[in-house]
Image (cartoon, rainbow, N blue to C red; front, side, top):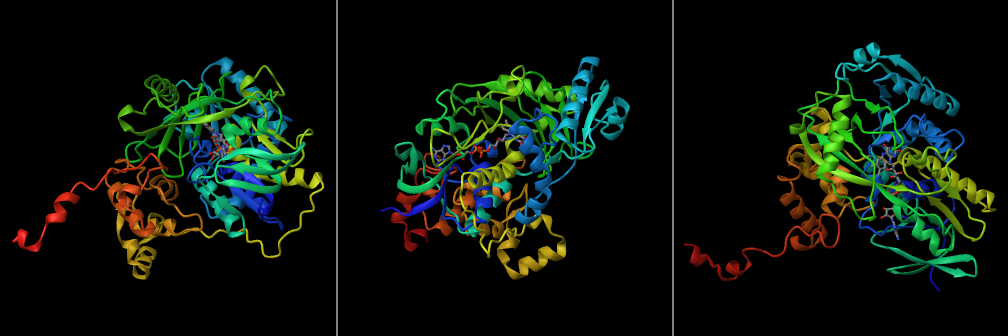
Amino acid sequence: MPKLYDVIIIGAGIVGSMVARFLSKYQLDILLIEKEVDVGMGASSANSAILHAGYDALPGSNKALTNMMAVEMWPGLSEELGIDYSRCGDYVVAVSEEDVAVLEELLERGQQNGVPGIEIISGAEMRQREPLIRPDAVAALWAPTGAIGDPFAATVAAAENAVMNGVELLRDTAFEDFLMEGTKIVGVRTNRGDFACRWAVNAAGLFADEVMHQAGVRPEFVIQPRRGEYVILDKADFQLTQPTVIFPTPTEKGKGILVAGTLHGNVIVGPNANFVESKENKDVTKAGIQEIWEGGNKLVPSIQRKHIIAQFAGLRATGNAPSPNPELDYNQDFIIEIPENVTGLVNLGGIESPGFTAAPAIALKVIELLGEAGEHLVEKPDWNPIRTPRPVFRHLDRNQQAALVAKDPAYGRIVCRCEMVTEGEILAEIHAPIPADTYDALKRRTWLGTGRCQGGFDMPRVVEILAAELGLAPEDITKKGRGSEFLYRPTKAVEQDHLTVEALI
Ligand SMILES: Cc1cc2nc3c(=O)[nH]c(=O)nc-3n(C[C@H](O)[C@H](O)[C@H](O)COP(=O)(O)OP(=O)(O)OC[C@H]3O[C@@H](n4cnc5c(N)ncnc54)[C@H](O)[C@@H]3O)c2cc1C
């Protein structure tokens, strides 16, 4: 008989990881499964990283409720999880009288949702705050509680805190089907075998529709991926006057192409919003880059294409669950429910934006639903909400750096020159509670390879370190799992076999 888990969470994006972290507070046996080789490889690692203030979501919707709850949670949560967070505020810029009318709607919506301090400022005031804004901006909506987060760090930290508190994490483990007795879920089938459970939480992001269909829930609910493409600008070449978030006035396609600072010091431009057929299609297209470039340029004319150092795309899990206002079809609501026709499922679906923002509040909603379903949740006396962050060398002052190097010389060896990431940081992540065992896992955690050279200098050394620490051959080291190996074979192996000291002299 397999071990009976109280809860199995399917998907370790920001939502599944937050659910695991908040549920780990209770005396429950929890298993978190993720089909990829690392946590946070889906939408949670390819988004704008904005912690939305809450004026966009329609009043009364799950999006609005969880967004507003989460805005309150993020400052304390960031402290607990040891991750960066910046409440820099955000702007929506109007360039015409029609745009101003939209700002007024957003202001009213924000006030209904309870967004504090939200106001419309004049074009002159906007230009004073950000002189790089297009000169004909006529007004802007200012929301002081808008913030920038780090979705990579947040997902890893939430999952890690869950693991510290006893949650079992299985990566490279794909949900295939539910094990059911009639309409009751009694377990899940995965590519690594069956696991028994009393509850399953569907946090499968883009694939949440397929997961719920396996339980016979909402057969009419379909997720259609909506791709958003981005470019990143070199931090040495372009900066906003102050790191902040600048949106255009939204359209029926969504919040529009923004120009924003990131917690890592770069400026990000994007995303567009185009439906694609495949849930794997994260292509960055020529047309897409052109579209976002024009959008970004409209807001901040001084950005220059030669400053682009990276591009990527993410897929929004846009569902067709009824919207509180069907006219705004981009505003389909989140599904957060225990379905009536099945026992043992907490079903989450259509978690597109503001899903990063809302994730901790969605986790609390999951706990509330379990309580309402009669689950007797008993807190663990020894639950530890604190995850102590590992040292980030570039964030330390000279004295702290010297002390760290004296304690561990690996911190004195810079592996990524652009982002100043040390060997010590890489080793710490390889041996962390959720080991970083691919190049991209290290990249998400340490930010190596994200600078101007995009990994050109650090990659060979990182492969070497990973191989040595994991006891693998360099050819077995991957970028992001099977099929993404960097190396095929040792190039000089044949010659070396015949090399002798005599032959050399
Ligand atoms: C372009 C874009 C911009 C966005 N901008 C913002 C923003 O600025 N602010 C904001 O708040 N939100 C934003 N979002 C939304 C936000 O990124 C998502 O709502 C959030 O990341 C969803 O998290 P998730 O955990 O539900 O999904 P994911 O991160 O996709 O996680 C789901 C996980 O489930 C796993 N999985 C799927 N199927 C299976 C299976 N069969 N077995 C096991 N595991 C499985 C996946 O591999 C994945 O890791 C944006 C999204 C996009 C795409």
